[in-house]
Structure formats: structure tokens, C-alpha cells
Amino acid sequence: MITLNSERGLVRIMSWDDIESVPGFTSDIDPKTVKLKEIIGSYTFDALIPCGLSTCHQPHGNGFLVAAADGRVTNIGRICGKKHFNVEFTHMSRIFLAAVRAQQSREFLGELKNRLPGISAEVATIKNGQHGAAWINARVNQLTGSSAALPTSIVNAVRQAVRRGDGTLIIERAATKKEREERFAAMDVKGLEHLRRNVPFVVEDRVGQLDGFPALAPGNGLREVLGTIEPFLTALKEADIESLSDKQLRELTKAGGELDANLERLRSIITAGRRLLKRRNIQQLTRFATSSTDNRLFVAFLRDLPN
Image (tube, rainbow, N blue to C red; front, side, top):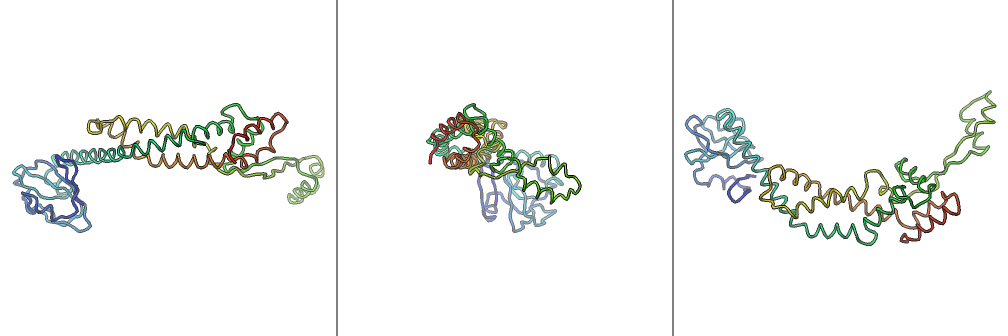
């Protein structure tokens, strides 16, 4: 494909024949008698194109279209450009590639700006809709203890599940006599009867598995994800893309390049949060309530969750 940087912006051409029909194009220029004016395009082809310099004509797949001071246009590779035109060519190629990148960024941001109404509407629905981000975030904060509303015993069970990294709910208890005997037999501690009699073992019983666990995982905060997406949407809406400075263009393009991934992350967290906050799912934590007061508080929390 060929990329031309013209007054109309970037022009992309698929056929080399279109280049050969450009006024002034020649496939044979003597580098000793010509002065470069500017680089006007670049190309990448699977098929090899002969270099336009009379001293080379070696086929290559990547190169530049250059305009000479006398109006002629030809094509040369990067190696020939540096060899015959030295610093001048290097400077021109940098200017050209920077201009192409800037124009590509403007086109990219323009396309994103056309998508803004749909994206903004989706984010607003995700944020404020029924069982949306605001609703999920408030309840996840309660479950993880970021806001004081649930009993400590329930919060600790959730925190332990988070630390385990898989959403498994575990209750620890003292081992039975039979379990201790089996454990010591496996350890083969002959002659250490005092250990067998006096050392209690703790057994972990798996009593549940929280569905939608990723909504609780560190780094999956909805506030953080929305805090990345919403400022970008506002900045893009207010931006005059054609007037952005190079720095502003780079920063906005970088954020724009991360937008779809952040949107997908937001959707994923919302889906996980809605799975997590089903009444039947969260009800598994009931057995961690250690008093009637704890139980009443937790029942009030459950009452607000969908079936």
C-alpha cells in the first residue's frame, strides 16, 4: 500500500500503476545531479519495486516517494536515501513520518468522535442504570469493608476469599480425634505421643464458592475504570482535533487506543458484579454470621439483592 501526504490529508493507494501515472514520475534519476525537495509518500508491497535511482535499481519492498527540486518524482529505499542524500534525507523522512503519524491520529480520533454518542449513552446506562456501576460499587464496598455496613464476620470471610484469589469460602474448625489420628499416622511420628494427645489440628472446610468473584478482586474497581473512561470521553468531545498540539494529539490518541479495552473491562466487571450480587449467591455467607445481630444486618443486605 502507498501512503501519500497531500494537502487533503493522507491518501492511500493500492496500485503502483497509479504512482507511475503521477505527473513528473520517473523511474530513473541520477542522485548526483538532483536535489531533494521533500518526501511525499511511503510504500510497502509484497512485490519488490526497483529503486528509482540510476545508480541502484535494486528491487525492495519498502521505500519512499520523493519530489526533486526540478519537479520530478521517483521512489527510493531508506538505505539509498541515507547513502546519497545523507542528513537531508534523514531529516525529511522524520518530518514525513511525523506528519503521517499525526494525520493518522487525527483520523483515528475523528472516527472515535463519531462513535461518542453511542459510547456515552452506553457508559451512562452502565453507570446509573438499574443494578449498574453505582449500585454494584456501593455493595461491593460493603462486602469488602470499604464502607461500614456489614458485620465484621461477613467482611472477614469475603476478604479471605479475596486473598485466596478464587472466591472459595472456607470455615476453619478443630480437627476431630479421628482426623488427628489420621493426620499423625500420615506424618509417621512414632514415639511422640504427647504431640498426638495435645496438639490440635485445624481443618479447613470448603463451604461455598462465590460466583462473579472477579468483581471483588483488587484492581477491578468500577470507580477506577470509569475514572479512566469518562475524562477521555469529555476531552474528546471538547477537542478541536485539527488544532491539537503534538503533545495533546499523542496523549489523546494513547487514551483513545485504550478505550475499547477499558470499555470491555467495564462490561466484564459489571457482568461479574451482577452475578456476584444475586441473593442466592451472597446467601452462602450467612453461615459466617456469629450473632443474631450480625444475622439481622446481613438479612437486611440480602433483601436488597435480586433473586
